[in-house]
Length: 549
Picture 1 (cartoon, rainbow, N blue to C red):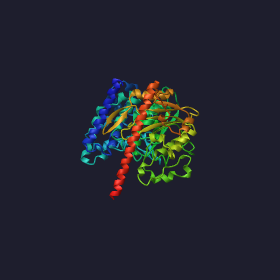
Picture 2 (cartoon, rainbow, N blue to C red; picture 1 turned 45 degrees about the horizontal axis):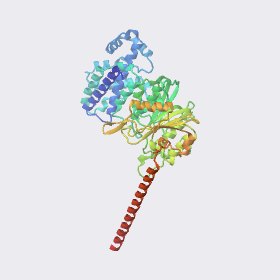
Picture 3 (tube, rainbow, N blue to C red; picture 1 turned 135 degrees about the horizontal axis):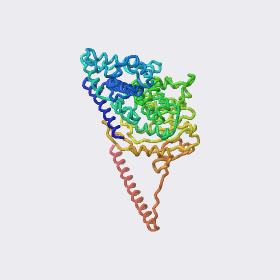
Picture 4 (tube, one colour; picture 1 turned 180 degrees about the horizontal axis):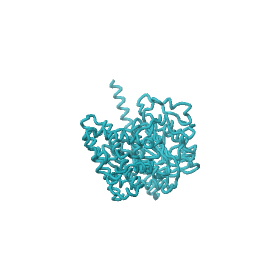
């Protein structure tokens, strides 16, 4: 990482820390509402600075002005020309009125009810840009960009000071240099922004996908420098969007359209922020808040069946209670989609229902004829010898759509001890070889809060990606198998079961061989003798115990 990029990232992290400190000082630190305040304020600042950055690029007079304050001052003097500038803006840039700018708010911060002005400004920005910057529910209601921040402060007398403290921090900082950076910088900033808020992504919550895993998946699905145009990317359990964003960047943001769905409103808010930060505003209309399993929202053009996608990535929830709609999924009308069946409701621990199996089936059903997918699964899925797990693996083998498996190190996710693997599906791999990679011994242990997790080093990430790209066979690390071999091993996808078993041979003279055999014989006689003594002793104890009664 270059020094300039590192400096920008550190300054952005400092802003995030300062905003969190303001929340803490106003009694809402670590509260359920803190994430909304931090993300809304961060996004408002980002949109403000992006607007000024882009508007300079379309007006040569404004382009000559170096400081954002100078640009804002020039804009305030405009009248009719300002509206023409808005019309020329790229659709991916939020359009702001003069009174929406941070400098305008700052100039009014001593107003008697400043907090109301702050809230009204955010809400007006959301309404002014609702057609492009909103996401939707499964029922097609639009979810606006902002809702205001002062409502989260209980005491009215504290609202003004809270809003003033926020605006003071926003004025001091500028995102301008960050716009020149690429995906990796934004990925680091986004991960830092939500790191304290990614522990409870709704009912289906499992864990935040580490950026290292997302990068590995993206580079295996799409090779470096591979040219791809006009493809669709889908995640049916999108969370904050780490997987789809990494893949979109690997493909090229301008060459793909993202489609997502997630049951958690919080996740969708983070995802929207992530898409905006990474120049994927054109995909916001395809972000849906809803239950993928019962109400999938993406259909083909004729609305006759579910849409099929070129690429699908997913880190689905592994286990959760979905008993309230389990029978709804176990319906003959859905048999094609859920071909392997639906987990039964256990008498105890309903929250252990294996919901990830439903997502795997949904993904297979949603893949286009030449589609590719990557799914994070519990490693136990690879070898389960009965039930839905085996039925799914059997279909993947019989229909010849497996590309490979990567088994990850334990604790690769800090919030769960579940061992995970990544299942790669490729419908074009008919009659091809399958690469099984055991990366479970890689990584270094690090402490993250109360948890210990494993972090893959850059060279280890490269090793996994390169091994897959070259289809390399490496002793005790990777093995290439055929579909017939998978059938012979009862459809097991575990690399270890296919590694060659090596036996070390030692040359012995006849004399040494005889001595070894004599030693083994003496040891066996000794063990037999000790065993006989133990047997007699046990009999004696039993007899004594019997007569004692």
